[in-house]
Image (cartoon, rainbow over all chains, first blue to last red; front, side, top):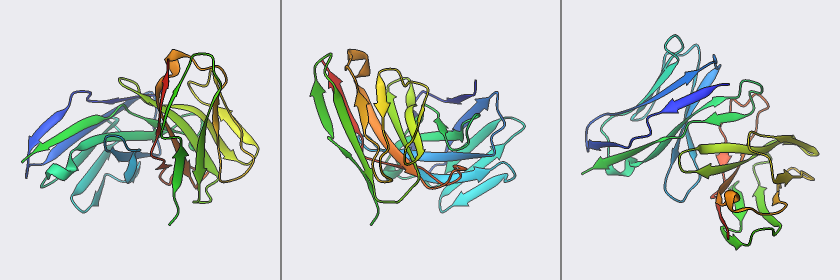
Length: 113
Length: 114
């Protein structure tokens, strides 16, 4: 079955630095990959989608890469701010049905002032 | 503005009781989903629906049921609540059968089964 792996350990970085989060997946070649942000006590919020034929996608201070050979996506936040502190989830379409989304367990990011 | 709401936000119940969690969306989305989120497991799919009268089982569907009588609502029922069903439950919706569009999540329901 398909598996999504995100670093379960929290990532703590200094404000102003670039945060890089990793999402690895196995047993599957998805047509796209999504990233979501989740704040404590709230539901996830969609951030970005990157398709398999796109190497990189940007949105303001966010950058996502998608390496289908390595089966890996990297999520970067440049010029990080304390307000970026949250849990970030990567998600893939289900193998049996693209309308289902399978989520990774997320990486908690803390930005210290 | 369109939104997706869940009620109640918090619920405490006893083992063996039937519990229904409500989910209502005004996005007019065809697709609706129920997830549970537990530490160490992330979001796990319980049930989902691609339209009125359509329901499908997800990876952790045992002990849960859903029904879809209209586009806006997908209530989740725990037939006989168990302590293992203590969790945070999220409802979500999306507009495309191909799933390329993002999922919109509700605020969640925190359920405690004593």
